[in-house]
Length: 322
Image 1 (cartoon, one colour):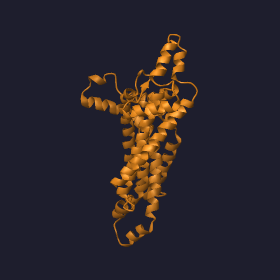
Image 2: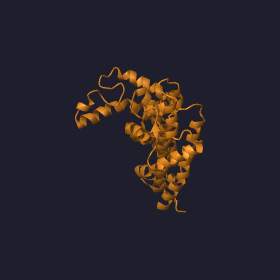
Image 3: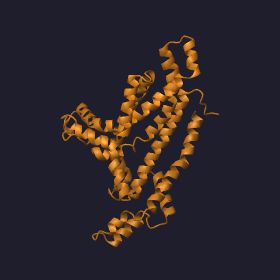
Image 4: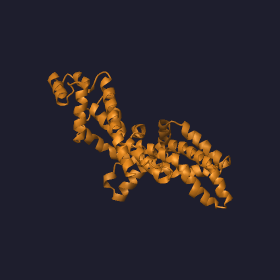
């Protein structure tokens, strides 16, 4: 397994380079750049713009710009954000923790309900419970995320203790340590529900289908014939095999932690990376977009690697050393 992990990490290096290269080219191919806004400002002299171009190598050919940026990244320097007038690492780090808290909350909340609901639906196949969960799933899948956010915000107006947006209350700094945690927890309720409901509806249907397929296998029939208890058949034999496809999805869900919350953050007013990434793309803030893409690519790599390792742990048939 150690050799496999090392091999995968080596394979991910050209993948990461490819992602950054394509992102760099697409941003540069788009007409205009951030300095065009400065050129329209009569208070900014042409000498200042030339100084910007020279300082950040924007006057050099694209391959030179990319390799200079790549060399600086290896040194820990992700460049300078023109729109925020601060280093990219500082801009991202100031918002990344907020986005990670929201995404992790949604991630945990989703997977707490996915497997139990899928098992309940499979064990009550074609009964009222199964049909009711299917009905709720179809509704949850059909409702767009942004529309669900607006609905929950409207309903929150009738509940005094439920915040209507943001991450902290006005008096947050005056609260105790436990009070600050509870305050952030109250602000997490609406965005967590918005991010989780759609995922729960989709994944519990997948879990139900996986478990029904496993329960119809011949080895499950053999286990019943040997007189094994229903509990042992379900939770020791069937459930473990039904989880294999879910582990792969688990890895992709982990890789989408930072990117999946962008739209919800903008609507709810959560101070995360969503607004930063949107502003960076709209203003063509080159190095801020590149920094965000690098972070997303790293999460993609870690998520896929985590899924592969978990698959090898849960499924003895997988032997990566061969």
